[in-house]
Image 1 (tube, rainbow, N blue to C red):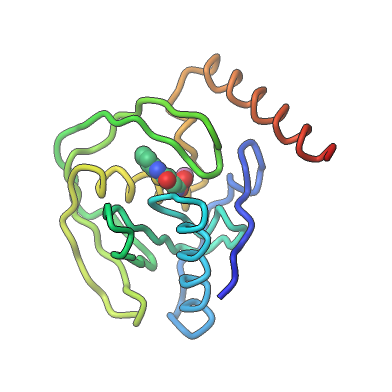
Image 2 (cartoon, rainbow, N blue to C red):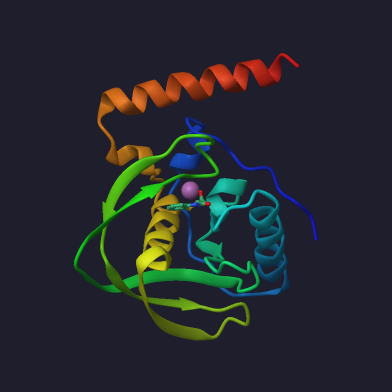
Length: 169
Ligand code: GNR
Ligand code: NI
């Protein structure tokens, strides 16, 4: 297992649209395991492959309180959505910034699991928020895209300053 580096907004590599996986081989399974390790180490509830500079349609998450229920989705697709909910979101690629985002309340998701087997789940609440947040990453989107241009610019400035300070160390 190895921990991967998480790209940070406004890195243009977060803007790529991820390609579907053609097969779930040991390579993809290892990437999923490394992403889980990276997500747990960063105390996130989800991670999309784009965030660790791998532009493939893969996301991992664990929204359990006990942090022992990892989920893996290859080629996830939202096949049904209902209602709306607003939740305060954060992002490992936008550290320290939080904002309210409105998304579907309930979704039905189709994907391949770690063994490459197709499955479908119904999700609501935080799980639904997290899956939608991660699929946005796979389409080159970040939650700050839902904010006003002014708020987004303020966040961008703060993060660039932080990144510069870190580089100077
Ligand atoms: O760790 C995370 N927490 C979170 C909280 C509210 C809504 C979405 C998320 S996802 C985020 C991890 C992350 O950046 N995934 O891409
Ligand atoms: Ni994120």
